[in-house]
Image 1 (cartoon, rainbow, N blue to C red):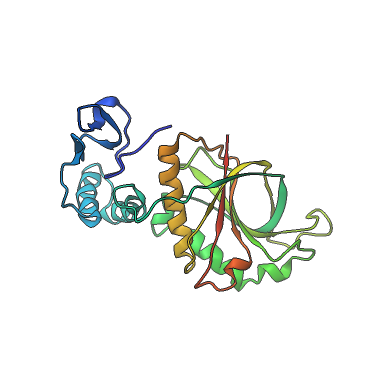
Image 2: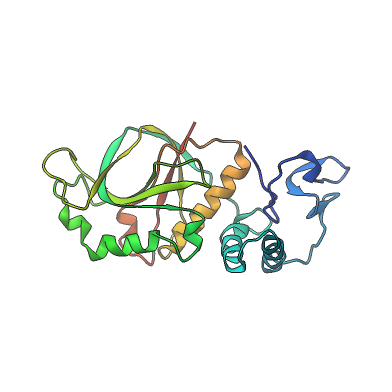
Length: 248
């Protein structure tokens, strides 16, 4: 699995790009531009300064500045050099398949950092349309955010569905405008957010997830991943969310 420099985020796609540890052997975490002989080449640089440097490179490659800055602001702070504290180790669980009913939208991670973002509006629609009250025979009060129908991987299009689990989603009619999605049976790594305000804790946890997988060697299946909003989210200012990532 491809790894990234834990300072600037550069994909470490070949050995020549690897920095060096003290003694000359190759670093597996940092690129040659950021790290030499076990030291950072610019030790006084802040994460804000690194973002400014990387924005210039991405602009030269044709990316609009606002998109480049938004992407870097969401990604770089989760890298090892800049991250505050250590990752919480995810737990491995196996889950049977189940179905949820709710509303869906198609989007991509690239769109979600631009004006084309779909997820914030989908959450607004979920509450404004009282989706929960439209669905009978709910199994519990949990809300799920399911990521499914991946086009490729983290870089491709996918569907996100906000919904609830039914005791039996095939009993009775599904209200017009709602969709049924299956959460697949799989092995999942479960990442638990810090406690804090929504959606900030969810965004931060996804940043940690992307960085964790970029350096773990564990492979995702992209068969379906989901966020679980249970009783710990009763207070949206002090919420804690679990994110389930399907793995091989």
